[in-house]
Length: 126
Image (cartoon, helix red, strand yellow):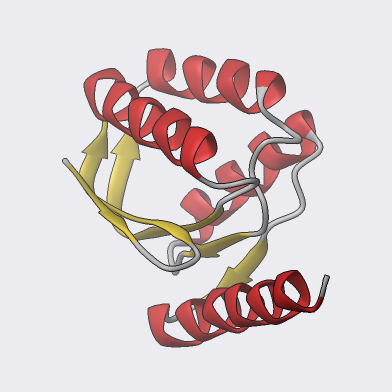
C-alpha cells in the first residue's frame, strides 16, 4: 500500500507492507506530475513500514529512475530494515542516484525542507 502527499519540497511517499507494481504505478504518476509542476522536485521515501516488494515493481522502478535520473532533486530515504536498506542502496547504484538515508522521518523532512527554503531564497535573488 502507498500513501503520497504533495509537500513544499516535492513529494512525501510512505510505503506500507508490500510495494507492488500497482503502488509503483501510482508513484510514477505522482512523480511525473510533480516533475511537470516543479523543476527537480525532492522526494521523501519512507520505507520504514515496508515489508517486501515484488520483482516486477523493482524492475519498473529501475526503468523509471534511469529515464528520469536528472528530473528528480534530492532524495531522502527512511529505512530501518537492513535488507530493505541494502536493496535500496543496490537499486540506487544501478541508477546513479545518491540519496541520503535516515532512520527516522523527522530529520529527513527537515533536510528536504531546508533545501526547499534555500532554493526559494536563491530563486528570489535572481
